[in-house]
Length: 328
Image (tube, rainbow, N blue to C red; front, side, top):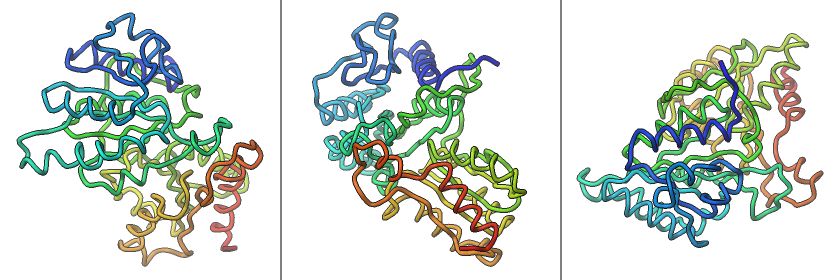
């Protein structure tokens, strides 16, 4: 199978969706001639024209509002927020409008739109361009929240998101854009509620999201040399969440570590902890459930400080080893 970067996989998914359905169009800041801040939409304006790859003024509220209006009239817009941090300017449109329309109209109207946004730290972009705000949207009924961790999932989940009749928040980590993986050329869809067991193991369950999945897999490789086997679980879709594989894994290993980049307080890890603690797996736990997350501070500009702010491979190794050895 051929390899594509994460960004190339997303671009191919967008291209195939636009080729298959004339109702699909793209809208956002600098996505046309410039090709997007991270190059995901490069070249698409030449293929589909400025009517389907629409460059907008700097107005995130306008992008979201245009997507909602277009979706209500039968189109399938894919909006792009240049940095996830700027989605704060479109919260009224996404939370009070897009998320609620289908419910307020008794199912007679729907909002089939996707809002793409790059999140996360690691590029030296500092406090206003490096946030992980996914749990804001997880908290909102009516929105689906997707966080692909690799190129294969990126294409399959994006195509499924475009097909979905509900508004989807599609979060791409900036550090993943250049990573490569096997990606089929033909279109394919991955269900928007299917947790993936990225690596099987017997000693510690590690539930990780986005870029933390690859870091957890690297940690698993290192700990395997010590005889410690991690089972790495990737939810892929945070909402709706397929929690059965997580609960089953925690029941099997008896130890659970939840890893995400967003700040620990109010982060998605708390939802995972609550679901496992409230399930039959609780009686099988042999150690306290642990969370490893970003510090409750804005992301620093200084590279060394930025590195220390969010979980890294070595911190996952450290915490998983403690659980496996009962040193918590």
